[in-house]
Length: 206
Image 1 (cartoon, rainbow, N blue to C red):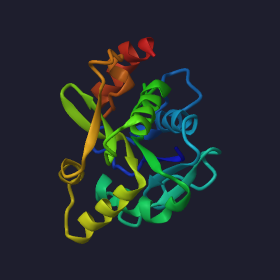
Image 2: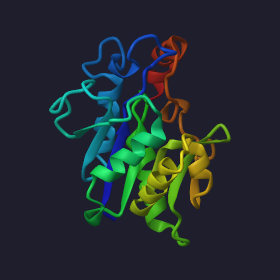
Image 3: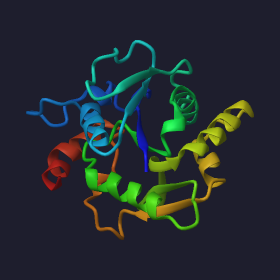
Image 4: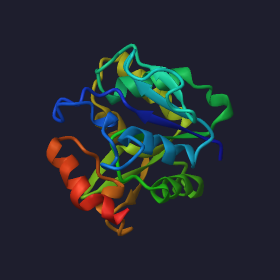
């Protein structure tokens, strides 16, 4: 399967108070949270695209990725995905891994599992989504290239919520709890408390 990767990095980090994606992955790290995610995704896919607001991250910042500046900055992941899908040549790719940029503990095993599940799917599901603590994580998933039409159509019809669109797709699930993955493999950071929790007990398990 020919697969690309999209990392969403266009949020405003309101709850964090600072740009969480620029935070060091840990105090003595040479990489930021976002750089870690991009590195993990790039190890699994053919091409990586980082979707961000104009002027946030310049082209060339990530040697292994392309920067896509979203003209609909800060309008949410559905708009970002619709824009990103329109910028990628899907004639040479069958599917795409989608990851939020705020996953400091993301491990390649998670993405390998998503990719394998999509390749092995016998019912031609639209995608494979991670489920954590009983809830779907649509920004940690693998989607077939045709799903881009669903993103674009939803935006054209005024939809703003990604989960409403995902609910109409046929998606298989990879359950993080059943897989017994450490929590931080799939857990994002949203607040200063989340980041402190990651620094104090999360990074020891990855």
